[in-house]
Image (cartoon, rainbow, N blue to C red; front, side, top):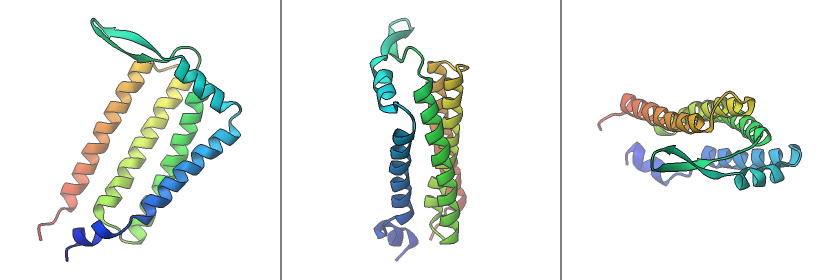
Length: 156
């Protein structure tokens, strides 16, 4: 039985812990940020369609959404830190290279998203630039995951 076959059937317990932490952090944010649920509803109600190019429109929130962006920034930083802890744990338990790569790309993505949300909250970043930044982060994450996979790939 190859390593891939062994890990396919094995439950990723650190992944489950990470998901549980994801839910806990969201719950803590809603419990500690005053009126966050109302602000999130206002955020979605403020979304309208804006022309970005002749014949092309895209969604854009209007108004001051700094509370929502600030909460999203806090979430992203905390979750990025949790991904660092998960990555260290994956090295300690000698987990597969693929799962380590997933944690590494999670770190890159969440801290990158935190930077974007922080810039949105400060008013120094436009919504559409932020969306472009998310696309760039997804591309970087895929590239890093691919590089790690290629670097650790073994033909058995």
